[in-house]
Image (tube, rainbow, N blue to C red; front, top):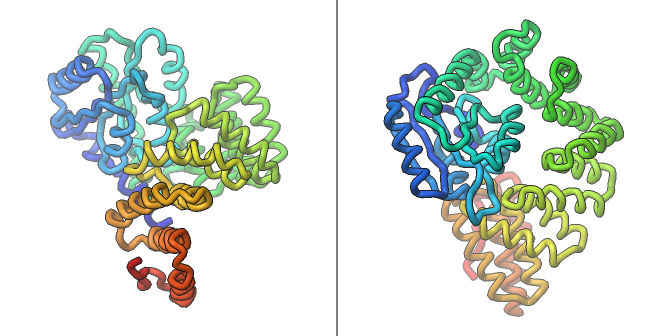
Length: 405
C-alpha cells in the first residue's frame, strides 16, 4: 500500500508549473516509426518545448511515464507489430493514477482509427490530431489543452496538495455553474468523490452528467457508485445494459468481473476478465487479473500462459504485481520444472535489488527458496526455513533475512 501510494504521489506531480512557458516544459514523443517520431520531435522543438524525449514502444513509454512526469505527451495511436495501442497506454496510466491530471496527452492517429480516438476524446484525452497535420495544428491543440489545464488549475493544485475534498467541491461548483470545461471537471470530480467514499454524491453527479449529455464513462461511473455502495444487483443491471450497448468497452468488463466475483460466480468472472483481456491484449493489468483468476479457478494452462506473458512484457513496470511471479513459481514447482523455477527466482532477485526493503518481496523470496529446496529434496532445510520464517516477528518482518540456499 505504501509503495503504491508513493508511486502515485510522485506520478501526480507535474514536471513544471502549468503557467510555465513552453521552454520550461518537458515532452515525451511515443511513435514506432522513426520518420514520424523525428518529425514530431522537430515540431515540438520548433514550438519552443525545452526538452523532448523519444520512445519507440508503448511498453518502454509506460516505464518512462511511471518514473518521471512530463508536461506534454505526444503519442501515436497505432504501433505496427504491437498488441498495445496508444489508447491502451493512456487507459492503464489513468486507471492506476500514474499520469498527472495536468499532463497534456495528445493522441495522433490515421484516418482508419479516427473514430476510436474521437470516441476516446470524450473521456480522458486532451486532444487528438489526424495525420497528416501541420505544426500550426499541433500548436493550436497544445495551446487549447494548456488553456483548459490553466482554467482548472485550482482543482489540480488541490489534488497535488492531496486536498481531495476541496478539489471535488471545486469540480462540483464548476459543474453546477456550467462554467467553462464543466464536463471535463465533472469527470474529475466524480472520480474524486468515489475515492473519498462520497458515493451518493458521486452517483448524483454521474446521473446529472448523463441527463445533461449522455457519455459512456458517466454510465460506467453510475455502476461504480453502485458497487461501492454494496448494491451489486443494481450495478449488474447497469453493466449488462452498458455492455449490451457498447460491447467493446473493456472497463465495463473489469467492473462486471468484480461484481461476479463478489457474488461468488468464479467461472463467470473468469470469462468476463478473459473478454476484457482479449479486447486489450497489451494491457498488463488485465492479463494479470485474468491469469490470477484462472489459477484460482483451476485453469492452470491458461493461468500459465497469461502470467508468463505478463512477466515477459512487464517485469520492469511498476504495474507488474509480484504475486503473479509467485503463482508462476508454484505452477513451475507443480510441473517439476526446475529451470522455470530458477528463472522465476532470478526475476524476483531483480525486484529485490531495486527494492531491498520491500517486505512483500522478501516473503515471496522465502516462498521461492522453499520451493527450490523441496524440488532438490532438501526437506530438512526446507522445514528449517519455514520454522525460521514462522518465528520471525510479524510486526517487523523486514528485520528477518532469509538464509542463503
